[in-house]
Length: 314
View 1: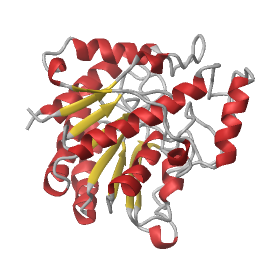
View 2: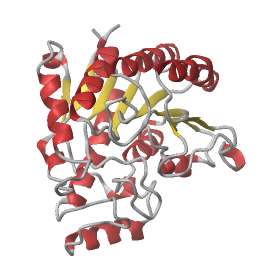
View 3: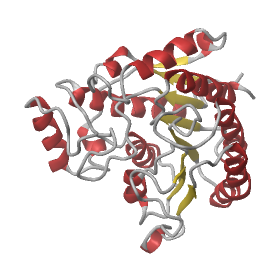
């Protein structure tokens, strides 16, 4: 059994998005309840949340944006920058905890205490841009973690695989000129947020280090596995990353209400195993997943469970 870490805390449920919003606290409750029922749960290394330092958030977001988020949320607004990113008075603090907990997970993995880990945090992050919130996201947790791993742990090459059904526009834009971070995304296209065409391959020195695999509505596991086996895995092998980070959205599940893709919970296990093969060869097995989307509670919990089983198995 591979040492695997798990970050969850009730504080992440204090980000109240209001009645009827798909990105709701019950998502984390469903995940945690499912994992606690599994025999492997007791073996998981539990990671604590903490407030994320602003100096690390500023590696991805402008200081002006961070201050504006704080002031607007504390003023009592209900939506930040767009009508989909709902907030409450505690949302700024919870977003800081999401960042800080994610960085604690990075430290746990880099210390060798665990080899793989899952951050069950919210608000999610991959749509958050340099200076504005979008798509339920406030701070870009995975992008901040990637920068942190480079700055504080000296990693040279980081791979980010984003299998959320929505393209991670914020993450792509953060690293599109950076050849030290390989960003790979599979996503329904055309779909929100409208970015992620195959022609988007990075800019300047980063050209070729952004790889988008737009999937038409109706795609299922066979189409995804073809992309993973024949394009994503070879690209990762060529890049030789020091760690693999996963934007783990589970909204490409066939039960999800926000997409038209036909994956199953078992699909995420298969993706995890494929990525694990690369991690074992180049990264000492190191992988960290960060929760993004996934809005059918049963499908979400089952998919996370199977991803974790993929992490834990040798």
